[in-house]
Every structure is written in C-alpha cells, then in structure tokens.
Image 1 (spheres, rainbow, N blue to C red):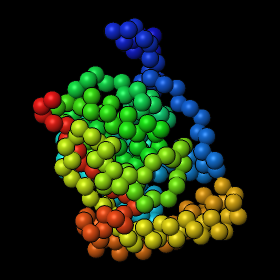
Image 2 (image 1 turned 180 degrees about the vertical axis):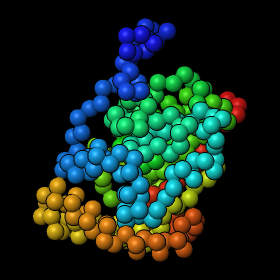
Image 3 (image 1 turned 90 degrees about the vertical axis):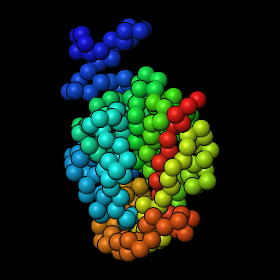
Image 4 (image 1 turned 135 degrees about the vertical axis):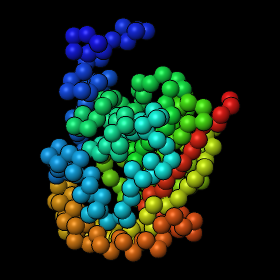
Length: 263
C-alpha cells in the first residue's frame, strides 16, 4: 500500500483506498428514474434500510444470513457478497458493490471481479444478477474465481415486477438456471417466497401505478406506503415456501450451485 492506495504487483495499476474501501471503479451517478426516495433512504439509513425493507416489503421475509451461514462458514472460508447494497450478511464476508455504501469493502462493477482464479470459496448474490447486463458472463467469471468444490449461493427474481436499481434486465426460471450456471452442479433450488407474496406484490405495484398517474417519484412513494400498510398479509406464505409445487408461482428463487472438484 502506498500514497493512499494499492498497487497491483503484476501490472502496477493503482487503486485508491478511501475510508477502508478499495476503489477499482469510481461509483457512478445513480440514474434510476424517480429513484430519489429509495436511494435517499439507503444513504440515510444504511444497514437499517435493509432491515426495514425486509420486514415491510410485500414479499415473504427471507434471511440471507441464514441462507449463507447454513452452507458455508465465512470465518474459515473466503466468501464474497456481490452487489451487497446496504447490508452486510456477516462481518467475515467480503462485500462488493458498484456504489460505495458504508458497508462496502470493494467498489467495482461486477464484470471486473478483482480476485485471482480459484481463490474464493463461495460467491453470494442476493437479487443482484437481474441488474447486470451480462449476468451469464458474470456467472462464468464467478466459476473461474471459485475454488474447486466451492459454492455459488444466489437469489434471483422469477415472477418479480420490474424494478430498476439502477437497471433491471433479467428473470430466471428454475430451468433457466441450468443454462446460466452451466458447468456448475446444482445442489438445491427452492422458493423463499410463494403465491401470497406473488399476488400481494403485484397488487401493491398495480395500485401504486394507478394512484401515481405516471409520476415516478409518486409511484415509488405510493409503493412504499402501500407495502408498509399491507405487508402482514405476506406471512400467509409460511405454508408455501420451500415447496416444489410452488416453484412455478415464486417471486424469487434460490439456487445453490457447486463447482465440480475435477475439471
């Protein structure tokens, strides 16, 4: 480390370090249309934002911490959370995001993945891959950086409504995962939410569009207000989560994939 940054020993490229964050890229301006309220809350509330939205969102509550810690120990393994946003799942997990939120360790675009090949024990992504243009390419790069026998732990939207953050490109079925994670061995697929969340989420989205008359910020405010009012209904999904029969009616899907031990 020198002069407030890090130099690559291989190519001598210099990367600044500010407030404990390594900047492989400078964070872009947040271009989401009407994203003022959500982005303002993220910046003001930090990690508290993730906790509040987890409770008040119209989709059944999902615990990324439990999802990860039941499958890998970040104290003993190298675990990287891609697109972490404002949450830190565990102190031992390396956090990566294109925006420099308080809890981010490495600021960079996911296309870069500044890790050596076969150096990471597990990659985690929670509702992130839909927001990158080349999700299939990133899945391939994750494989290159993952140790043999390492894990991929991913939550990806399926029947989720369009949501910019700052862009939204992709939806994935449980069959589509076989294409995205080609070469990985799929160990588990399950629905962390179910049909009640599906209906509630789209009902809230429909009403927020209806009352906002096309105004982006008003729509976002309406969505947040309606979610806060109606979110208790989602807990009826307790009867439908992790049920194979309801994979076809899930807002989101969780995938656990493993890199084969041998080439």
